[in-house]
View 1 (cartoon, rainbow, N blue to C red):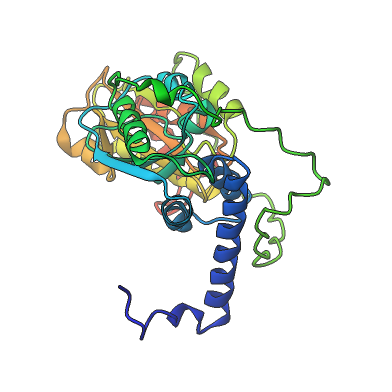
View 2: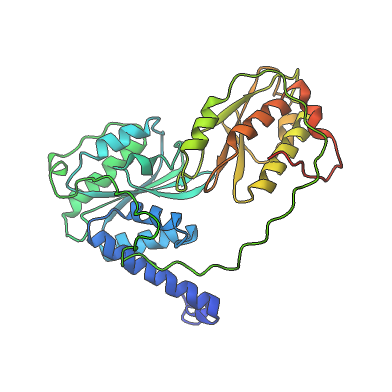
Length: 351
């Protein structure tokens, strides 16, 4: 139990007090919406999109609303295996009309993701499952009581789905009033928001004035012909706030070796992308492993001609993915030197 001497320290200043009030309002609004038979994961996803809920508040909201208020039952495991087909999870879970389901997946790169297993769009936030990561499955009946054994069975079966297994589903899970309904389209701008939604936090400051155009650096020569990158273009158009991570895209090494020059080129391309889109993060992978230091790709000496390096972009309002993929492909080719021109500490205006 938290010591009483520090329990209210966060309320000692205006910022902490206001943050606490907003969090309480969010919880109350979420309780009202779950009482009205809305899935908490869908509600949380909406609040995150609207910037009325911070990611750090997600787990406390889930615990308070589902665990404390509505007495949902939870089962959590480190996945012994990972399902490859997320659509299959939604297809099966949508048949369990006796229970409402919420899953919390601790993504290795994005942190805790709260999803509605019956909603394919919500599940798409996960992007992919990884073995040994934690999944917590919650099962309940909105504002109604339910038999603990039934809820435990539903939560356990959901965990099995995430592990890529086909669980034995009790017949009583198939009939009930927790039928999945696709979320309604948001009202057009100007329409009144539902009363149950928490108020948005006031803007911290006015938008900064637009800067003038940066001085043009020497043009980057075109890369050698590479295959069209249509998947990245299509993903860029399809992604919306709430889909937190793009699919993984492969970049083939066309240089004889991914050496120090290629590494520096990639670092400059990514630095330029981050300068243009500071709220987005470029994640690099090789051989299924997250690469936190790109220099290691050169040190390993394993990344040779024909090898593939993967990347993804995480964040809200993702854009510039196709151009990023194009530049990274050039950086992995014999034309990498184009990105090494200019002062060492300068950021290239590529985006």
